[in-house]
Length: 249
Image 1 (spheres, rainbow, N blue to C red):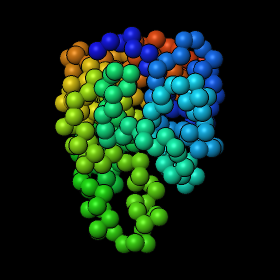
Image 2: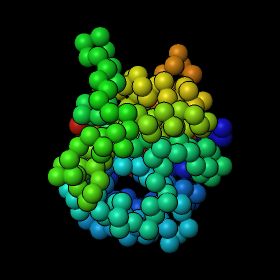
Image 3: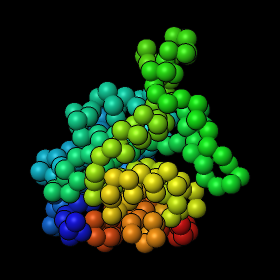
């Protein structure tokens, strides 16, 4: 894989999506594509927030984070009022600027599936599929005749397993692998299974680089509203890094 390919990754924007988009456009040269790592806190529809990028001819891809279900409006602006819904990377592999990128949005939740972190926390698996949950729960517990909002940002085993049958160069996820102290071995395993040589994640608001799988897979964490390139270059320092609040992985 050519790490010099001009793809940028944006860490959890938390209300700064449009500002980050404008800053990327103002900086030359433009990337071929930008991948957002979730947790948008959208004040308008996603396609409106990133319009500076799309108008400039930059492809915009994304996954959701855990805070994208904090409010119904956040969810609607991302999933129901989004002309870029076809660019949702979750549970699929897409060729982006010649690079095969796999996406896994959301987070592990004990109400669905919580993989083992260490010897003190064993794996909890309650539901394999969304259809199984819907079949076992009353309509009164649903939202808009589907899953309740608080389960729509969960990582479901059915998505994880489906993605594990694919091949990709890069795994983009909201959760972290074991390179971060709050990461999951399940992310390591998925990256190895699909043949990824790089994992890029958000969620923990930390800019860092590390390696997993005995040094075979590079990991890049992208901090709060930070922007990093495929080769690891920092294009925009994360907000918490600027404020001096970032610790290590």
